[in-house]
Image 1 (cartoon, rainbow, N blue to C red):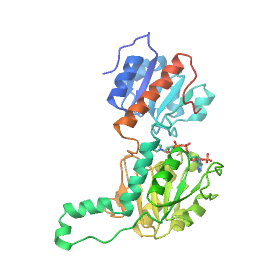
Image 2 (tube, helix red, strand yellow; image 1 turned 180 degrees about the vertical axis):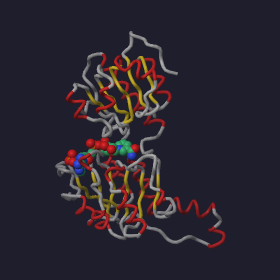
Image 3 (tube, rainbow, N blue to C red; image 1 turned 135 degrees about the horizontal axis):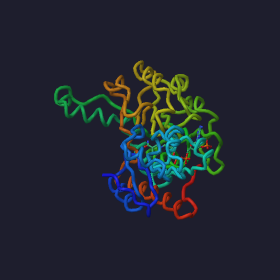
Length: 320
Ligand code: NAP
C-alpha cells in the first residue's frame, strides 16, 4: 500500500523489484510511492510527481529522460545495484540530478555465481541433475565425460571488483587468468590483452564482468565468438547488452563454441527460447547478487545514499 502524502519526509519514488524489507525500511525514512515497473504510471505517481525528490530503483531499470522529466523536482536517482546503465546519466548531470550505486557489497556473491556457472557448464552439473531425475542413469549408465577447469585459461572482460574476485576463485580451481579492460592495470601481473577479440583467441573460458551501456554494446559479437572457438565457453554475469545475442544463439546452435553460462540477457526476462533445449547452456534469471544477505546490504546502501543526500551530507557512492 502506498503512503498518504507526508510532508515531513522527502518524497521518494521506489521502482520494484526490491526486497519487501527494504521497501519497509524506505517507508520509515521517506514518503514513499512504489512503482511496480518503470513503464507504469499509476494515479498516485502522476498526482505526486512534482513532489518526488528521489528515486530508488534497480540499476537496470530504464530511468530515461522521459521518465525523469515527469518529476521536475528530482534531485537524486539511487540505484540498487552497481550497474547504473538503465539511467540516462547525461540527462541527470545536465539537470543536477545525482546518481548513486551500491558497489562492493555485492562483489562476492556475483563472483560466486560466475564461478558457479563456470563449474556448472564445464562439469555439466545441470545436465547431470536432469540425467539422474529422468532415469537415464539407470537406463543408459554413466553419462559422457565433461571438462575440468584445471589448466584451462580464463579470460576476463572487465577486471574490476567482480572480475578480480572471479579471478581469485578461478585460480583456486587451477585456472590461469588474463584480461581485457580499456586500460591495463598497473597493480596486477595478469597478462593484458588490448581488445576482447585478442583475449578470446587466447583463452578457453571468456567471462564478462564489465559494465553494460553504449560503450560495451555487443562487444562480444560473432567475430569474438569465432575467436573463442569450438572448445571455448562464454560466461556472462555482466549485462545482456554486452553480447550480440543473435550471434551467440547461432554459435551455440552450430556448436562453434562449446557452451555458455548466462545470468543476463538482452531483453529480460525474455531469454532466447532457442537456447532452452541445449545441454551445453546453463541459464539463470539475473540472480548473481540475489542472496538475502547481499540484497539486504544493497537495500541498506541505497537508503544510505538517499538519506545522506537529504541530510546534505557527502554521498557515499556517487557515480554521476
Ligand atoms: P568495476 O569495479 O567498475 O569494474 C568494471 C571493469 O570493467 C573495470 O575493470 C573497467 O576497466 C572495465 N570496463 C569498463 N568499461 C569498459 C569498456 N568499455 N570496455 C572494456 N572494459 C571496460 O565494476 P564491478 O563492481 O566489478 O561491476 C561490473 C559490472 O558487473 C557492473 O557494471 C554490472 O553491469 C555487472 N553486474 C552484474 C550483476 C548480475 O546480477 N549479473 C550484479 C552486479 C554487477 P577500465 O575502466 O580500465 O576499462
